[in-house]
Image (cartoon, rainbow, N blue to C red; front, side, top):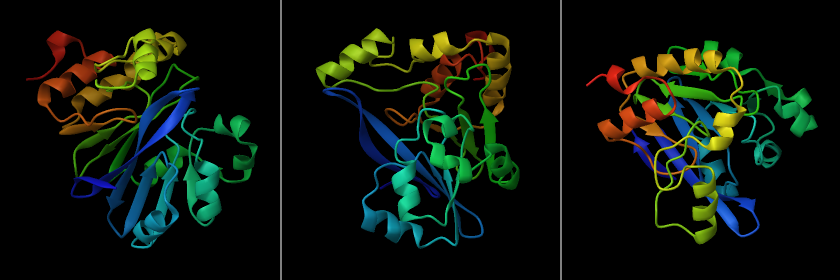
Length: 232
């Protein structure tokens, strides 16, 4: 577990993309007021570690941020069946047991609005991602909207990232771009991100972004702003 800001933590693990190829993945933890905790994209947590961390909080919310990050929801639920899980309804087809468990992200967004802003990214049903902004730490949390994986890295990962146009740079995968069918809806949904007072961007895959110029670049990469529109 790594502390990023006063109320933000991350946990890094690796996930298998294909035989011999693994991507780094970051789970995010947002400590909220009233002794609450929001977990974004739970991973294969070590049982003792996660139990020790979670027991500090009276209310915990588990969030699947998009239609792709759901691999470890079952093991998390087996360990903490009392914790509510929030995510896109598309996950029910992938994990039918969620039909009796999963709750709407809109519901949680309304509940936590004073602390965390929820931004559903529209126009891409394949991804169906929601981006989160923590007001206290001024942190933006994205999952697969773009990558920031840098060298050095294993050869297999280099090949995959090169294929999708995201090797060694802040970039949106060609797969995400091609799956965005409603460009106008997508553009309108990412534009509000450019208005945030953002001090860092935490990505699901890759390195933390804190430099001002890199934050600007990331906003441009996802189409939130054009280069000439980025505020100094």
